[in-house]
Amino acid sequence: MIKFGPSGNSLSFTLEGHKKTEEAARWVKDRGLDAFEYSFGRGVNMGEEKALIIGEAFREADVEISVHAPYFINFASTEAEKASNSFGYVLDSAAALKLMGGKRVVFHPAAQGKQTRESAVNLTLDRIKTLCDYIYANGCEDMLFCPETMGKLGQIGTIEEVALFCKVDKVFIPAVDFGHVNAREQGSLKTEEDYGARLDYLISELGFERMKHFHIHFSKIQYSDKGEVRHLTFEDDKYGPEFPPLAAALKKRNLEPVVICESAGTQAEDAMEMKRMYYSV
Image (cartoon, rainbow, N blue to C red):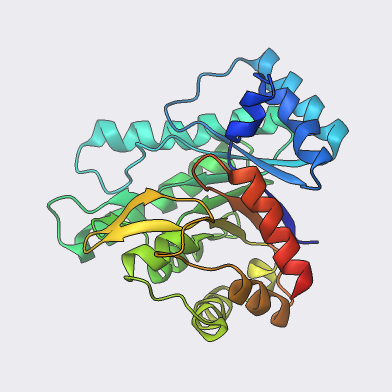
């Protein structure tokens, strides 16, 4: 079944006096949600004992937990040390997530830098292939690694590029951030057909089985001519994108992804709104 949940904890979680990630499991479940994404954005600094405690809480609540690997991953870096560190960030995220009982590791592929787009994409692809070798060598082939579509023009991560990376091996499935897509394409996602075209492309490239339970990030995002500026909430009525047309496109294609909301401070509330919208379409 399709699952909905927040990326991290909403402001309301903190205002209610909660502090620990393990408390989020029951908090999310009690609100009718069934997914949660933990961010290692600033580094993987979680001990084994803490990971096991979090994992037990999410198992008991029957809430699926995923993680977002550190933001500073760059598989297009021309510096060997930064590339090597990027492999470590993904694998460390996977090791912690395995202790937490989850399966999905989301990561940012790369930044273009001063290279040509073609050179940066090719270098990223080569490094994704090496990452795949490391995944198998570390016994993580039972997990899913999700390169994410990116919102800024200078980042590697168009839908087409993410599809290319996912073709490397079955351990990779797309993390499609529709807010990012909309931002880098200057408000391109408006209708069910707009969403459907992107979904149909990914299905044609990766196959229905690989896309059946793919990963989604969703939020409204402010953008400029260079792409993403900042995440907003569902209260915004200027930038979009809107969720109901995506819900219709997903239903029509029998896709059942994990949908993670990345709204700014209202991610749980907006995830609940997406679930309501989905079942009312």
